[in-house]
Amino acid sequence: MPTHSLDLRQRVVAAYQAGNTSIRQVAKRFMVTKRTVHRWVRQYQQTQDLAPKKAGTKRVGILEQHRQEVMAIITEHPDFYLWQYQELLRERLGINVSIVTIHNFLKKQGMTLKKKTYRSAKVKEEEVQRERLAYSQEVRNIPAEDLIAIDQTAVWEGMEWRVSRSLRGQRAYHYRQRYKGEKYTVIGAISLRGVVGCRVIKGGMKKGDFLEFLRSELCPKLDARKVVIMDNLNIHKSREVEELIRGTGARILYLPVYAPELNPIEMMWSVLKHFIRQLCRIGKYSMEQIVKTSLLLINPSSFRSWFAKCCYCTP
Image (cartoon, rainbow, N blue to C red; front, side, top):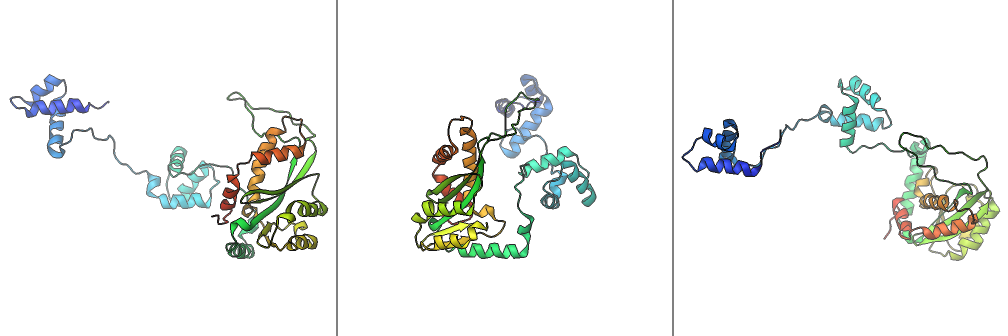
C-alpha cells in the first residue's frame, strides 16, 4: 500500500493542532482513518518529524548470522556448484537454505563467477616458494626503468575471434578449417617505455633465431645499468646467450620456475593477439606487417601498468 504524502501528513496535524476540532472530524475532513490521524499526531509530538517510516524490519539472514563460517567454506571450495554449497552447509553447519538464498548471499558479498586462471600446482612447493621470495628480494632493489623483459609467443595466420553473434537461444555455429595457416614465433623485449625489440620468425624458434634477435635487436640497446628478465627456457640459459648479454655490461635475472605472472611481456602478448585476430581477417598483409602494426596500436601507458601489475615498483 502506498504511503501518504508528507504534505498531507503536515496538513492533517496542523488542522488538529489548530484546535476547536477532534480527531474524528479531522479524519472525516481529510478522508483518512482516526487511527491514522492519531498515529501522525503522536509521531509529530515525539519526533517533530512526519516523514514516512521505512517499511519492514532489519532482518538478518541465516547465512549472514554465520558469515565467517560460510565464507570459509567458499574460500576452501571456490569452484563448487551452488547445490554443493547447499549440501556442505547442511552437513557442517546444520543450515538448510535454498540455492537462491546462497546465490543472493554470494552476490551481496561481492563474490562473482569468473573464468579460472590456472597456475602450476608446483607453485605451492616450499622450494619454489623460497625461489620466488629470493627473486622478489633481489628485484626490489633494481629500478624498474632499468628492467627489460624478454619472451616469445606463437601466432598463426588463421587466428580468429573465439566469440560470435547469434539470436538469443541459438548457438553460434562456425566451420573450423583443418588448415589454419602458417605458424610463426614472435620474439619481443619491452621496458617501461615501450617495445625495445621485436622479431617475427616463421615456424618455431631455434637457438640461432634467438641469438640473432639478441645481436640485431636487443644488445645494441643494452648498457651496464640494464637488467634482462627471462624465463628458464633452455635456449635462454645457453652459454652464447649469457655471453652476448653480459658482453654489453647488462645483467641477466632469471624468473623463478612456474612464474609467468612475473613477466610483464606476457600481458603484452594477450593484447597483441587481440589486434592480430582483427587484422588477420583482412587477409592481405604478411604476419610481420600485422605484428608491427599491432604493436603500434598498443597504448604507451600500458607498459608501465604491466610492470606495476607484476609487482615491479614503478615511479
